[in-house]
Length: 362
Ligand code: DCP
Ligand code: MG
Ligand code: MG
Image 1 (cartoon, rainbow, N blue to C red):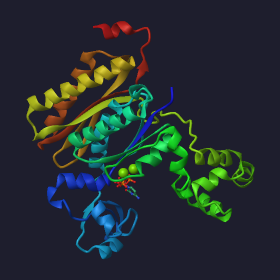
Image 2 (cartoon, rainbow, N blue to C red):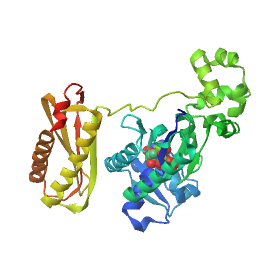
Image 3 (tube, helix red, strand yellow):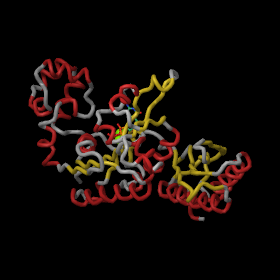
Image 4 (cartoon, rainbow, N blue to C red):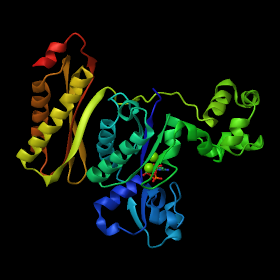
């Protein structure tokens, strides 16, 4: 079966979250700044919305320079822990749209690959519908937009998602791959850095098409066997690397916001119960046991706290998960007087439970 891969990248991620949280920012230039210990003057731009980009503001630019480009822009400090929680929710939506738990790969705080070979039946029209559905789901549940790229491998999917931004979707079929790549400057090839770009320029290679047409032996002579071969293959759109979870494969978790910030125990425990059921069903579909349970609480002031318990033996039953999660949640309620904003539960130290199937049959 011809593989079908989706790459999703959130649009102006940190700034989009800030816009969502404060509707009065809509239509204004919003710049999220990473302030250094030298205070507001020394910071660099983390990201900005597209209104700010129209004024020429970009990631990594000194905040002072950004301010001179648009004195009316709204400057906000980075709230990384909060963005990470939104990221976790987005990733759960994305993961649930992949062929299986394993065919999902988060590659940064705001992007991930999903393999959808099976669910699309290797059909690129169906794949586009799946991509549209994902965009809709992210918009509905998280109220932010993303851009989607679909292709026969990760390289093409990744390059396709940045082709049309924000809120875009780009589908590149296998037969369209070469036309898609050929006119692009080599620096757009995913994986090429500034040094390689310069060396290629010295060799007279500016576009991906020129790279594709170049003698492989000469590329190997300049870049070595591995890199030379990779350059030639990538330029012709070849990429066989699998979509595979790199981190957190040893954990299964769910996190969600309460309807509003609250300390109402019935609301908190019923959401916890829902999340735990979700985690349990994923434990069962993966046929694993777990040795740890972790509960996360984000308070109304965005402070995040976690509590964990670890067992001697792997377990996989409802009670071990729910009782422990509820006890930890009770402790959180006793320790703080603030309202709860979001809660999460996850299990870790996963073990294969082949041969222990009976555990699941209760
Ligand atoms: N980021 C950062 N510093 C950088 C680049 C990025 O702190 N130099 C952070 C802020 C971004 C997030 O990572 O919101 C995701 O990075 P992206 O490159 O995906 O950029 P954005 O999502 O902000 O914008 P785009 O719409 O171009 O994807
Ligand atoms: Mg992004
Ligand atoms: Mg990104």
